[in-house]
Length: 295
Image (cartoon, rainbow, N blue to C red; front, side, top):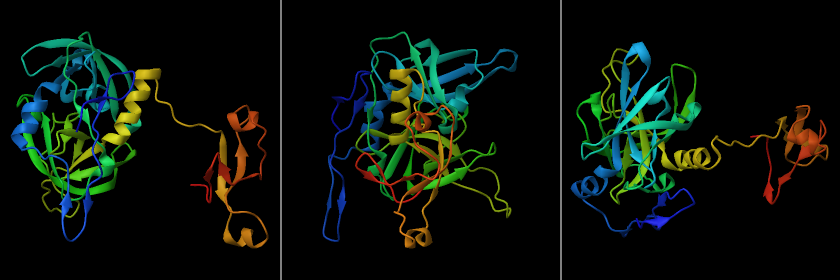
């Protein structure tokens, strides 16, 4: 990937053509060895200690988004913290402030008062293929600092429901991920970050079988969008229309109604209400994008 400026926040986005696979050949960019990925990126990864008063602290990992101090990690690493410390590979450490977070997507953005940091290069998780080699750099168990683990992409878009009821669409990997790795970077062999390690299956399954090598990471495409929103606006911006919709069924279409999303309810004072939409209106297009269902 090339280090090119991506936006006003100074985050670097890798620029690489999609990998095409056919039966004759595989076209890729320049692959690195695991040792090269580690050497190029270990200074861009950090350890995180989050202290929460009398309850002690938790440890996790993170990585540097921009040279002027923005760092990304998991929300669950810093949740409830009253003090956050970031440690760098060269042995230095610095206090961090929480800029913002999205708990439902387990993303948090921190900032340290530094202007000389080396940021990672972000890849595109949409380019990942099952079987791609991935590497994680983090702090398993909180004290095995800056450990490298490797594996492959085991599955993509795996829907995982957590104990609090939230669900996330995650990358599944057999790359070793342990407590303390949370918030760390998952790299491809181009040295680009493609995910944020955040969970693992552990212990025994409901059938009693032991569980090995099932870890998960948040796709970087999702995390980048959330992090940019936090950095640039201070909040996570999600589209809000203020309506409840249902599909226009085939049966309804047989009576002459167009395909689209039929409005069932409108939130009083919301954007749709202010725009003059009414109950039973059917949305067929948003700008040039055709709408065929309520999904």
